[in-house]
Image (cartoon, rainbow, N blue to C red; front, side, top):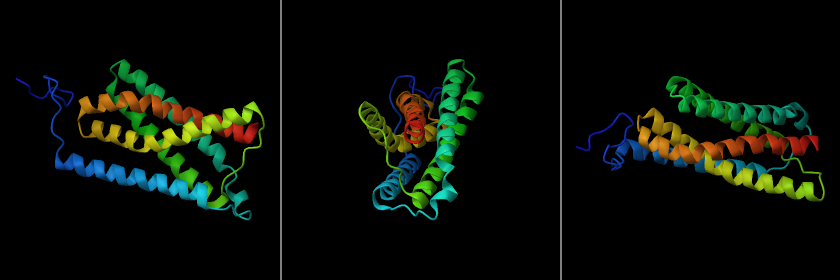
Length: 191
């Protein structure tokens, strides 16, 4: 009665106690998340562009958009694979999406550390749409760091019941952040 099922939860619906290992992992995820958000905030709000270095990193925004698009494609494929019960393919896509998003973060931080931010030149309704997308993208991107790390941690630690519960929130938000990242790039550099 109430034994563990193959999904890491319990058949009777009771959530297992969070152990010390989980607690330590969640603290680490929290610390990483806060560190990433603070670093990005510092780079966006407190750093000024170095005109001499900017040309050397000019291709990074396009790379960032490509990494976001790759992440969105992998997330979508991973979702379709798990719906088809192809667990290994799902896992490969989701870990690859995390790698693509991590590479994006490294590239994004590198670009903003060396080149600063680029102002949006559009006017009128386009400007309002851009800033609506940008604000929602930035806020949800900050939330995705702990959500994605926790979702992947739950899967890798075998706690599939909790993985599924958090993934229902993580997937659509992560997809939104990835897709709006591409849209923000397009509006900023090609409008």
